[in-house]
Length: 512
Image (tube, rainbow, N blue to C red; front, top):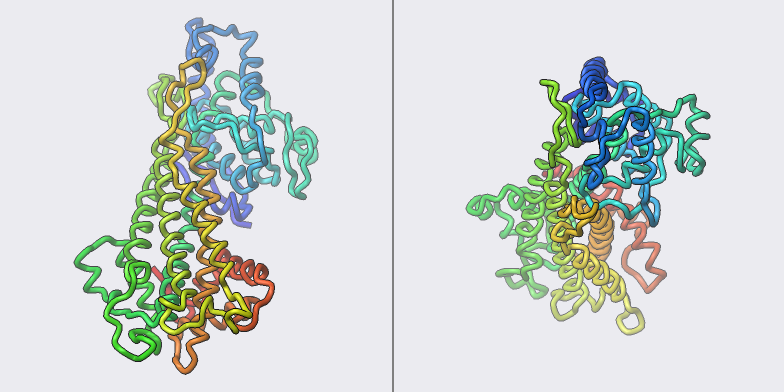
């Protein structure tokens, strides 16, 4: 099994995906253990002094003015975890919780948190045992980080609360730890606070969304090309020299992908009466501009994610010179903004895909295709309601595009009077990614049927590869009306699992 070694200088997006989705094992480097030991020495020295230090010998948030004596500090750390584990609602997905735990471990190992090495090792042991704390949908305002979700994870380290075992059954955390030979931790000064104070949930969801969107943007280029082909559109608008004079990198990549898919097509560039095609509708002609802008948004989001992966987000932090300083680095604004930006781009990509689907189904705009791509229009309804489903998904995506990060609701007796809502932005982006996948799948379903209805014309080799692969996957082609939901589900799986992109790349080579 793949192993990810955690050092002091952060981890990569690939590491996060390997642990969250691939079940990779986690190990602490010698460098990380040394840094943990050194930072803990600083915290212990401060804890022994009579002067109050925030997070070490004081209360938290609006209660930070109270000095806590040594006899109550273990109770203080235990209490902050218990009281902050106040989430409600449905359980969060296993991959999200694993990303959350792993990213918190990454920051702990930076040597800036003051957590003991044995606590970090227990975090790694829980991940390696396949134990997943039960984390709930609601409870994070994205400042000071993802408090409630991280608290539920810390509760598991203490042997309290509920967790899911590697068999998928939810049991008490104490049982699961004992079963795997893991001793519950007894938290000491600063450790409870250090386990809760980070942007790890929203960052983990950002990294996974970027991985999914990378496939979806390539998939959208493919379905846009298939729709252009089915509509007998012109590929001249995809010429590299046209995109070079508006040099947005994403736009050039999207146009190059579409052109690669259409290479060798016998369908492009004609009306149904063989008159030359002058220009196509915006949903076809401007596909690279819209998909390209989304790609460039992803590039910015990826830069933010890389910076956050290199960060140590905690409050207070232990500095190399021995100071323990309060700060505001836990605020989730940088991550929250790009999560919202990606949801906006996803909504627009879905919107333009739906317009192309509608054009394929409308006999007045499809250049000779049968109404709704039906076998016997009137007797058969064809894909009429598939487009309704797509429209409903697009409408939902537009609602999900409303930014969460534009909102703020004060908390902690006005001490935390401005928050990022980054967790909420991440949660709705996950839904947006799911719905975008379904929208692209419906365009794929319509476009492949439309291409096959162009009898006597030869599709591009890449299109033929898609047709062969999608039919082999159980997505049926033209014919009389049938139960449509299974076909759409199969098309969704075909896109979601990357098989659409793989089919094209078997002909074109890697897409951009």
